[in-house]
Image (cartoon, rainbow, N blue to C red; front, side, top):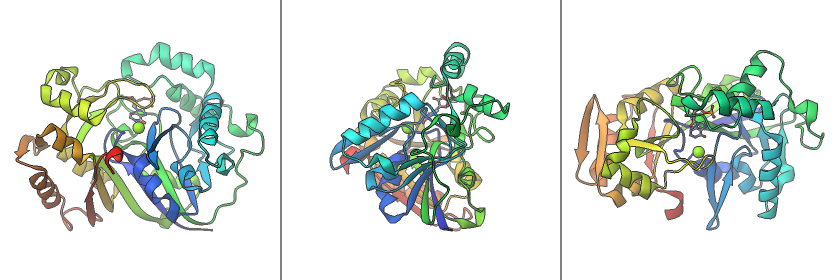
Length: 330
Ligand code: IMP
Ligand code: MG
């Protein structure tokens, strides 16, 4: 019996630092589970001063917790085993990782199709959309068809679980900036596909960033922004290069209107705004709000504005806003 499921998810276009947040919380839970996406995701987690990168294994691995790759995920077996090997070499207990039998398998044909036909959408080239297409066409191959039984989840789970989102609200297949989205449900209600009632959901912890970035193509983030020296400084100071693709990310000042919509749409109960130190290093503090670019003199003013505009009571369910820094600086 699952008692409670808390959800950590992204409020923007990914790369907000969800991995860091869920890794820090994982020790409080009995299981850590992914519900969507596959090797398109890239989580960077720092443990005892060492940097680790994961794509499919939930961050619970760093806390020695059982981890489930849920039925809504897609998996590339070769990449999965590379990740498992790296984690094992780094000293983590990889026998804790379990795969739901219904997880769909990414094949070479999916990857080829993605690279040949979906480049204009700026995909990660990992075969995500073709794999989910075959799932929907009901002709896909699943984990149960090709993984040895040691890896397959036996259906047992109880206690408190942490659900770890991949990608984010504006990459959601139903609510994101279609077609510049991914092919799964990134909104936290998708976590129920792990196999529990919506009534079990407790905290909805939305992770945002002090500025916006988008990995890949999106008309909301024109490439001309790269020519702006302040935006360029955000990318440089924030290390905004893809964990999965190595691509330089598109960046812009935080769009507070979009952030508030994401909070409302997802029913966020708590927000964490990451990478505030990057604004400090760049020394410029701006947000888009109500269609205007608002500038502040320092981080204190920036924070005060954010808290005032999203303050408790104005947005249903939201009762906590916290600010944080890049993981390397903690
Ligand atoms: P796909 O998921 O590879 O099909 O890519 C679709 C879009 O989602 C592209 O714009 C990707 O850059 C973006 N995307 C997919 N996964 C992530 C992620 O984990 N972080 C940030 N962007 C992502
Ligand atoms: Mg990422």
